[in-house]
Image (cartoon, rainbow, N blue to C red):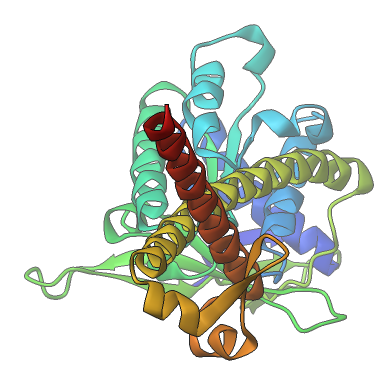
Length: 326
C-alpha cells in the first residue's frame, strides 16, 4: 500500500508533490516534520536541504532566498538566538517554518560539539512542537552522529549518495518503531512508497529515487555567503589556537635550551667539548649539533644564551675586581 498518492508526470513533479505531502501538509495541520539528510562529505546534503526548503516555501508563495540566513544553523552561538527569533512571534519571522542544522565542519569531530548539537536539536524540536510546528532538517555524515534520543524523534531519513561529476542520488525512507519486542524497541526504516497518477488517470506504485538539481542561484548564493563567513570564522579561530600552541611549544623549548646552556656553563669541561669562543661569541661545533637533538635555530639560541651568561659573569667579575682595588 502506498504511503502517499500524488498526481504527477515527471520526476521533478513527483519530488515537489512528495515535499508537499510529507512536510507542508503536516505543518499546515499543526504537526511538525523532522527529517535527517545523511551522506558522506560533499555528497550534496546541504544543497538538498536548501532545495527542499525552496520548494516548500514556493508552495507557500514565499521567496526562500530572502530569509534563508535565518533558517540555517551553522555555529553553536547561533542556535538560541535564531530559534528565539522564530518562536517569539516577531512579525519579521512569522513566515519562517523551517530550520536546517548543518554540519559544523571544523568542530564536528568534537565529542562536546556532538553532545551540544544533539541536545540542542531535541530542545528545539520539542519547543517548536509546542509553540510553532516547523520542518526541521538535520544534516549529518552518519546516522550514528545523531544520538538515539534524537533519532527517536525523526520522521524521515533521506540517504544521499553521489559519485564525482553526477547529481546526488536521494533515497527517501520512513522511520518507524518496531515494537514486536517491547523489551528491545528499535527504530527501523522502510522505503517510501508513492502512488503516482499520471495525466491519463493511470496509477502506478513506485519506490522513488530522486536525482535533484542544485538549488536555484539566488538560494545557493545566499547560503554560500553565510557558509563562507562561518568557515572563515572557524578557520581563524583554529589559527588563533594554533598560534597559542606554537607559543606554548616555543616557551617549552626556550626553557629546555636555557637549562641545557646553564648546565654547560656550570660544567666547563662539557662546555669545551661542544664549542669555543670566536671573535667574542660562543660557537658550537658541527659534531655537537649532530649529537644533540636540537634544530639549527635552537642551537643558535643555546649559543646566544651561553654568550649572554658568560658575558654577564665577566662583567660581574670586573665589577667585583674594581671594587676590591678601591
